[in-house]
Structures are given as structure tokens and as C-alpha cells.
Image 1 (cartoon, rainbow, N blue to C red):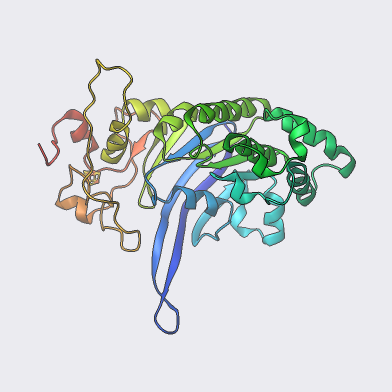
Image 2 (cartoon, rainbow, N blue to C red):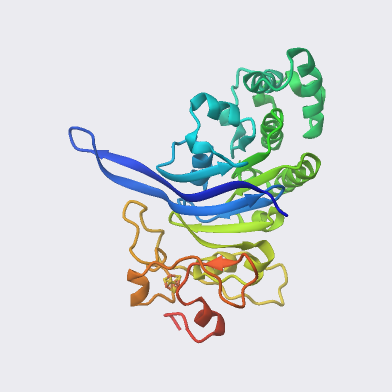
Length: 337
Ligand code: SF4
């Protein structure tokens, strides 16, 4: 039986907006607004969506880099939100994060050796006398030479810096790594190398990944399951194959229709969304996607659709749309037809 490693329930992250002379809270940015999902040990779950959908905020809230407003986050059976600061600091040994720009999270005045040594020191994972060997091993594990450990971050390329970020995450022997747009800034060929490295490390060290990305091509390559977010909520979740082969939410369909198809014989209808993503300060009532959805009705403006499965969907695949069966059967046509 699969073991639940991370269980997120009704997670909310509201950021206050201050205003007026007294700097009172006048409103909130509802960046994440009631998100629930489970990640099983050893799998890779990706969160995708446009910029501002709340995917990175979800990752940060899980790690309590920003203190969540509400909800629960259970990791390995323990409620992370009930831990005090020092308990949480220790717990971060098990939950690591790799950022888009590792350079921004690495002290530029430290050599790679110092960066890795410091991570192990903070988490007290390996006795001081054994750290040199561990650093050598880590450098080789991520495809860098042990001799490069005495260089400074600016002496490395973007791809190599991301390998340093991975080495730092691995140095404390984590269970779960959150990869927040970890390959987004890299060239395509380097991206593939880093993704292959992450996959190899997952097999070798039984790692679990939460992979946050706006790039569906990358997500398709790396994930076991995929979560699609829109304006702070999950609109679709499912096994990668089921979700990519048979997307149900009009937003997922639109995102997928934008991926280029390598086969020129296969024609794909591009679904163009109207307008921009609305503000998360005052998100639309009802279905949050209704202002851009080509299938929206009056009901969509008032009734919030819950995640659910139609009877033809594979196990674990759910979408939040009132009309997915009718859209699937072709009974319901887009408004622009
Ligand atoms: Fe579109 Fe309505 Fe479905 Fe929302 S509930 S995705 S607005 S059809």
C-alpha cells in the first residue's frame, strides 16, 4: 500500500494589504484559497498553472517559509503547523526546497564546500570529521567534480549552480524536495540534464518531489500526478496520463492546447483564453474561471464547482467544472462557436 508522505488540507494563504494613514489591513490577496492534496512516498507530483495561480505560494506555505493563514499540513503523520520554530527548523532536514535561481539563495561569498558544510552543520546530520568525504560524494552525485568544491558560486554556469542547489538539498538527506521552477531558467538541453539528474536521484535515494512549474512540457516528462491550479484553487488533479490524454477542465484544456505537437499531420485546436487572470484580491464569485471560460453560463457566476470525478474518468482524476460531461460529449459548445 502506498504511504502518504504529505497531506495538505484546506490550505489558505492570504497576504494582508495595508492602507490608510494607520497602515491597517484593508484587504487580502488570496494567493491560496482552500487547497487539499496528498503526496505518496516516492512519487513526483507537479503543480502547474499560470503565474499568480498560487503554486509557488503553496510550496512556501507547506515549508512555512510564509506562515499559512489556515488549513493543515501533515508530513509523515506529523502536523507541521503545530511545530514551534525550533522544531520546524529541525523538520526542514526532511523537507528541502530548490529554487529557480539557486544563486539568490546561496551566499556568494561562500565556496560550495562552505555552503554544503553549513547546511550539514545547521541540521547536525554528519559529524564534522566526515563532512569532507560527504562533500566529495555529493559533488560527484550531482555530476560536478570534487575539485570544484572550493570554487565560488559565480564561477559556475546556471546549470551547474542548479546542481549545487540540488547537492545542498541532498546534503541533509531529505525525504521530500520541493522544486520551485527549478529548471525554468535553464536552456532546454541543460533543463533535460537536470531533470534526468533529479529522476536518477529519486530512484537512488527514494526521494519524493513536489515539482512546481508553469512548463507543461517539463511537467509531462517528470510527473506521476499533476495538479492544475487557477487563482488559488485546484481545478484539476489526476494521474499524468489521464490528465494529459483526457483533460476535463476547460482551463486545463486551454493550457494543453498551447503545447506544440511535434507531428505536423496531427492538427490540434488551440483554445485561446480571453482576458487576463483576474486579481486574487477580489477573485470572481462562483467558478473563478468564469470570466475567461468559453463555456461559462449564469450558474458558473454564482455556484462554485467542487472537485469531482465523472464516471468515465480514471481513478484519482477529478476536475472542478459543472459541465465537464456535456463538454466532453460535445453537447455543450464554446460560446464563440
Ligand atoms: Fe467554465 Fe463553468 Fe466549468 Fe467553470 S464551471 S470551467 S466557468 S463551464
